Length: 136
Image 1 (tube, rainbow, N blue to C red):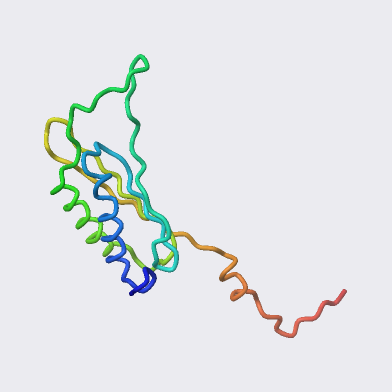
Image 2 (cartoon, helix red, strand yellow; image 1 turned 90 degrees about the vertical axis):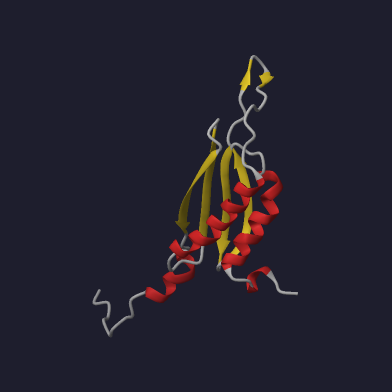
């Protein structure tokens, strides 16, 4: 069996959205977050936007949220958007989404965040002592 680290990132993102499909279906808005290290997904999840309460009562959802076909389209958009990721292997991808009430449409935006750990590369860029001696 192939491990996650051996799969292309696009296939990993597809897997994430398939795992989250049930949670995404009927969601009105939120953010899907994927954390990446060495081009391997280490952590993912959904941050749902606040559920509205009035006078201590949960407001019932009147809008259906994302439909199953919209979730599938969202998954394909997330995979296709990986073409915009350039030259980084560590970071986070955030997919913000929202269903437009009474319009039957949805929208999404994608934010990439690259992360670099200086402990991993700083030692490679230390200047070499070029024969200079301390004169003190």
